[in-house]
Length: 254
Image (cartoon, rainbow, N blue to C red; front, side, top):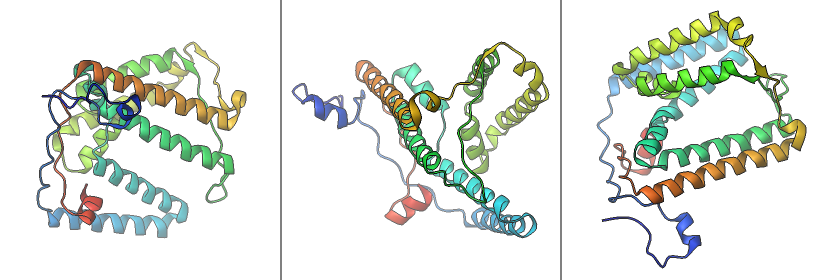
């Protein structure tokens, strides 16, 4: 059985219909009951910590803490991570997760373009783009990070939300992540002295709108390639995580 579109479907419909899988996607099971004790304790600690930072250090650190808390909640709510999406595409040809990443990155690029274009900043700051050198250190770091990400079972964002949600099995990955980051910072001079190309800001050459357009087009190409690979390999579907029932329950719990 397959969810591939009918042979006579028009090309336009093929772009908006679900990508084919070898069997239909499973239904999401019900989410387990809320553990009110840990939830209450975590919420109380969060409120007290935010209040302390606002009172002791001012509005800017307090807003940053609230922003970080919101990002952590979003990561947990969406069960977000880069590792599984790449693994699914390479191992079985399922590009569902990677296409979701392109949507996320495209939305982020659009919001950043608006912020940079308007120059709207908080607390007297003026947002500006920045660039880093492209060189041997970046390539080595990328490969080492990718290997560790696959061996550890999660990327940085996935590790943090998993630990925050109480998954103790991922603590070892978090320890390795912290250790590697600390060692890299300690030897930063070594990495920065390796051969590298000068930093390049795309907006300096094609303008801010042009750089946004190039980014979106590149992400669209990745989306199309991931979909084409999935259509060719007809992989098994991604398992559906437990989901809460009801509109507000879905908003809060996912």
